[in-house]
Image (cartoon, rainbow, N blue to C red; front, side, top):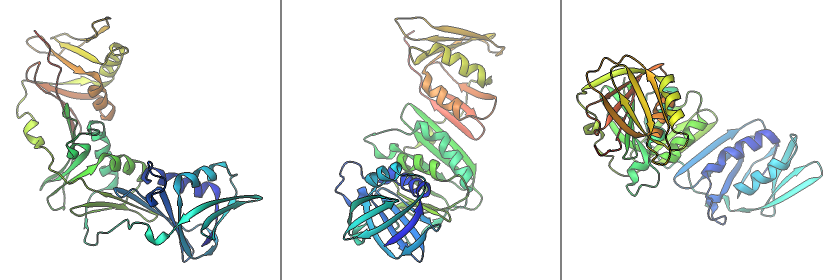
Length: 356
């Protein structure tokens, strides 16, 4: 195997493979990047068995067909040190040799035939949805996906395809986030995408791509890139029973004023109390050792005063993902979950229960 490639092009594609590599065991073949020259095209792959990435590059020269694997982290470390000029890469005596001008580097290779197959699925169903809408929808709910929950299904986001709409759902048990799109032609289905995969999808795909799935895999591909992930095998909680059917109070609030007020009182402590009355909203830190509070004057047209106590991060996460200048807030009682809504996106938050 042999090819000549510009340093920046090679560095960018090798860098994009890093999140897909096995990090703990450098002797594992999944810590390696797979390189193959086939018909003057470079194919690069990486996988940790759970997620994988395959990229194709054709702006290379002086090619000889062949394949090899090499430690991905070490390869990137070498490429970063080189000048932005052409690099020659070839396999000699079970080593990958990288040359530029009078500099030479060698890295040991593994048997490329031992590298795991990335896409084992043949009968994938196409998901008829705009990739941009797909990315925007999962981005909104990403902050509410849990981390390292023993209930594995909570460490991902549910894609719930219903007859009329597609719900994107996540929860960390303290809040529930849902964004949704109209379903035009997809069959009803449910599957859970791991959080790690969701984060990488948002980095990789900025333009339209083909999205496909089956019971165990999700694949997203365009002309130069193919991404795959295993789906989480589990049953997502019945999230719809958490959504309140009626709300005693429901009114719009200015987003910018909320963000400014919340940030003012959370410089030292994240838990806050928000008190609403007919003419104002009072924001107070719940830190027992210090005092932080601010107030905004606003006509809410409500009959009695009430409050919400909450981790401010949940509010700021929602507000950072909302697009309109005004968002809606709805609730029934101070110690019951409350509702935040923006265009095709809502979050239900468990409050902090305060003793009366």
